[in-house]
Image 1 (cartoon, helix red, strand yellow):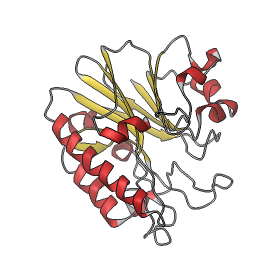
Image 2: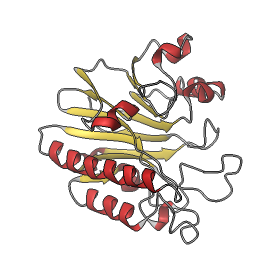
Image 3: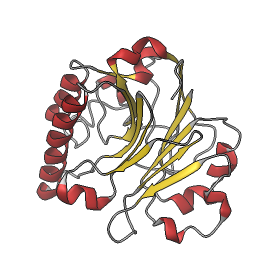
Length: 255
């Protein structure tokens, strides 16, 4: 089973850069796209609805920012939108496809800048809520694969310039500690289970140059029970569809 996760910086812009032509060549079972910045009703072209997929969208309240999309080759038993986080759900941050024993989620975490205390507080609140949610669902009789733009780089190996970025949001001590706690409590970073290279990045804040300042903030986080079913992981960097690169993961499981 192949899952591709990608943060688009706007779905229409990524499509103009060739995203859907590339997707057609990947034979993926799921495509999880974050930060679509549009409503499903804005998508007039059939290229946004490939016939081999069941397409689901969850946009923010005004349909102009955030938003997530989930393409499923196999028809889900159910689709869940939002996480029950009050105002955050109105921002279009999560959609999930449920199968018999497996759930595949698409997550867009909030971002924040160092000079915006309110945004930093909201981001911290979101992750506190998310941590509690992930521990609660861990006790269910199902496995989870949550693909997303987490807006956090976990370790120094996930930054090209860890010293320079050490005090920036996305690599703050409390954010990295949150990731530590997540990965010690029943979840694993799927990519890191099969690839430990220190030069694998998924996001470049300066999209005009990928020579430096790379971050790995896009991850597929999976239930601990799936650890040994992870077969392959790669970050696609041949074409640039946005400031982020797609994450491709193969699993030895069926939905």
